[in-house]
Structure formats: C-alpha cells, structure tokens
Length: 345
Image (cartoon, rainbow, N blue to C red; front, top):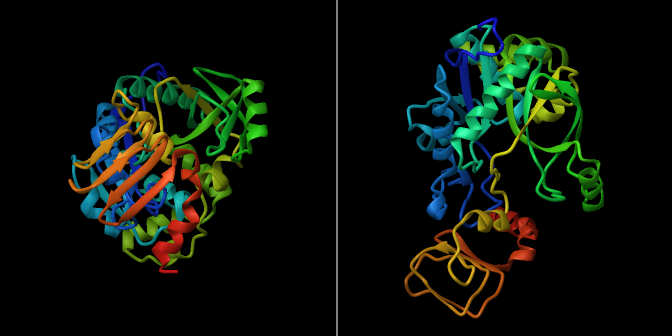
C-alpha cells in the first residue's frame, strides 16, 4: 500500500461480497431457494447486481462472492469469482475466510472491503467516495473501519455506532450498541453522535489478521486450512457468530466514517415499498394483475387473472411460493408464521 494515506491504491483492494440469509424476511418474494439478493425487485432490479456494479466502480484488484455452494449459480456472474464456504458459520468466519483469501491475492498490505449482497444504494459515486474516505482513515489511524449510516429516524431494526473523537476523515468508535427498543433509539437520536451500523467494513489485512488472532483465535488458521488443503474440519468447528460480536465490539482499533448516500438493507416490506416508484394513488409493485381502488399499497402479482381491490396501506404478494396479504403496519410480525410454513409445521 502506498505510504501516502491521501491516495488509496485500489489495485490492492479486494472486495468480498457476503451472500447468505434464509430468504424469509421478504417471503414469498424471496425464499431459501431463491434468496433476496438475487430476486428482481421490480424497477430496482436485483440487489446483488447493484452490489456488483458498486464493487467494480472501485476498480479493485478483484471481486469475490463468498457463500454456500448452493449459491454458486446465482453468484457466478458479473466478472466476480466465487469462494465457497464449507458451511455457513455467520459473518466472523466469512470475514476470516475472505481475509485469508485476500492475503493470498493482494498480500499483507492489501485492503479488504466487506459488502453484504443485499443492500440498495442507488448512487455508486457517493458510495465510492465514502469507501475511499474510510480507507484513508483506516490507513492513517492503523485501524479497522466501519461505514455508518446517518439515521433517518428511531429505527429499532439496526444496531447503532456511537462516535468518539475525530480520527482523520472519520471518528473513533466509542461503542457499538445492539438493536434498541424505540425509547432507547429515540434517546440515541437526541444524543446526536450515532450512526446505524451498515455491516459494510474496510479492513487493512495486516491489522485484521492481528485483531482476529487476539479476539477470534483459530478463525484465520481454519480458513487457511480450507483454502490450502480443502479440509473443512477446522472451519466446521468454528463458532457461528457475527463479526460484530466476535471482533468489532471487542477491538479498540475501529474508526467509522458516516455515509450520506441513500441506503437500505431492504429487510422489510415497508423498506421495499419506500424505494419503489409509486403510481398516482401511492401504490408500488409489479406484475400483470389488476389493481382497483387501492392506495398506499405494495402489490406484486403473478397472474393476469388476479384482482386486488379496495385496500389501503396493505401488502399483497402473489408468487409461485405463496400468497401474503397483510397491512404494511403489521408486515414485520409475520416471521413466525413464515418459519412455520417453511418448516412444514
């Protein structure tokens, strides 16, 4: 890596896209067999293709998608390589695997950018500028980096990051805060120095390896064993834990750069409704069905013979996998019913 921290050598940048999830949060649009990142969401396209576009805009050394072997057919496109996990062990193991693979490709002075496959970020230019800003902060302060999202409200579905003192173009991270209830989220917003945890991380590889060795012993070695010998035993023995819990909340070497671009993890039907264009009655969605006298609805139909009439602020999703009808306000409470359907209960 160049010594001048004002310049980021993106030819030393390895981008890893993490693909996974159970496909339940937007059921029946997404399913375990066809997860959310790979489903065409109307005019928004697929979230995975959008992530690929942003990744290549950085002009990195390579883009590699990490996931279970069953996702290879979805991920093997757009010039990205596919790196198979022997089994899902949450994001701490996936980051270690990405780090060990990146080390072999770009060396210890490289940078690893971790991107979830299912984020919606329409402005690739602002995204690129934020990534480079975060990289400069990490290099200047010899730290691991996380991208924060400026909160638009007291959201309870995201973790929060409390910023400390200024650190180059970013801030030292004072603490990570677990998903709060609404009163706590409102109090955090009044506090003012917090961001949502985006799950997008930037790691100088030499620092990542040191910090994993301290806080997640064995993860790097298990990843190397899988990459070098194809023996999955050590990897399969790893605890299934997120990189947030296993590393980021424990290390003292973290900087955060707030992002100003439009962002969504499209984890709920209200968030999907928010990003889609609306008709004159405030309806969003796609499909050949007939919609009459509805307003403020998210409607996805499969058949021309489908009629949706007289609803306000509802979700109606008709696919080959099932039918969902629920109010937008109640749509975040369907997880238990979806899991029961998928388990055959």
